[in-house]
Length: 251
Image (cartoon, rainbow, N blue to C red; front, side):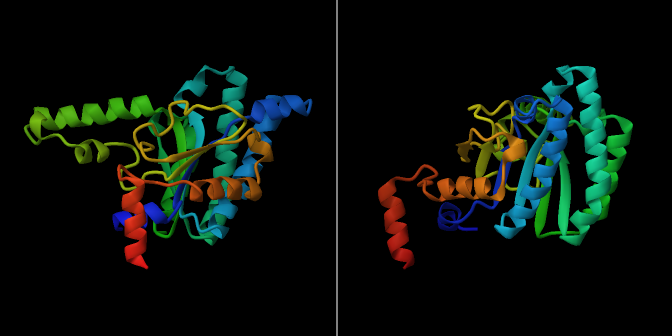
């Protein structure tokens, strides 16, 4: 893809920090688990909406490495919801030609949801046009640590000299190797931070924060985020004058 196309097109990859399930549930007089259950329904809506809006890559921040600190009952419920979601939605992913990916320290997940995840990824591995990425037991800092360990191992074996290390070497060891960087990061529920999500990959992403809690997030909210994205000038280090000149030359 040319630089000019990357400036003017998109978003092709949206990452979403799904926040606010607990607060939504509290406002409804429900348990936090009920909020997470409703959040799963939102996932279904947003996955469908992305295809309708021609978004080819969707990354959902489903469970962070820090989420293990939550009460055990809530963590167990989240793992059960993950397993059920994968078991129930794999056929839907296949029907719509969506390839499932997972990023994070997947090997640390409990056996049942991990097995369901591996089965779903295998069943959808041959699809190429649409991609759903689940960030599970994910931490961008852990990702950088793991990438660094892999790079160090290569240098010890003499396969890579420290002075030759470039960004592409590091990028190739991130969990997202083979996936495009996100164009747009969306966070729901009114919080204005990344919470350790795709820190390296979002270097040139646009950010959109909405007060809407995740269970209430709809296709219309997603469209608002996309409209905001299109209203911005993405320069990638260029000046506005350079962009105007490129635009005039392309006409």
